Image 1: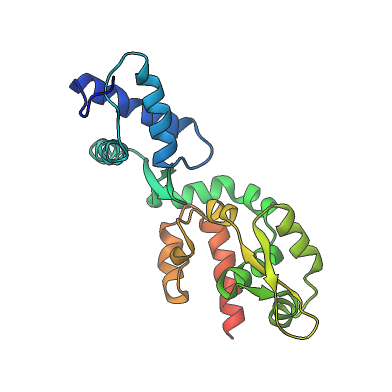
Image 2: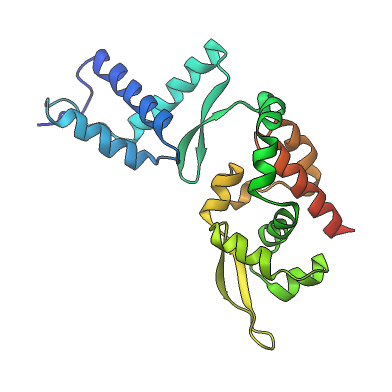
Length: 214
């Protein structure tokens, strides 16, 4: 039967390392609940402590303190109601150079321009997007929908009731955002560019947003 508090310091240390291993191995953010379920299942067979969400938060904080002391190039960040490993902002330039070509292939300039409009003006219709960009948006919208970066969120009340588009959770994952409130304001983007791991893509987003404001 589970007790209310961890039995030994060794159990706490082992649990912390289990959390570290799960986050390191996962390609997607893991919530505290997901981490907790796996952790308690692992310990159930030896009748030790039932860990809590508070323990998970403590483990993540402890790991980050260790990484700070060791001056590691990575840390654990909160993202989309979960946690994920990420490299530190000061290494963005080198990572940007490493992944520049892959990023360019992943999302084209036109796709990023359209995505910037949707992200900052959602919900937004195709006619509104085309009015801002000045070109047809059919192909780009289809591409973004296929990638699950945007989704249809409803219909406008205007004539013809065009579809309205908004961003998805995958959009947050792609740009390393916790939620839409983390989207940078225009005056913040230049500083963010120096700190973000997604430097190349956010530069294109910056250009698109600045063009939109002109």
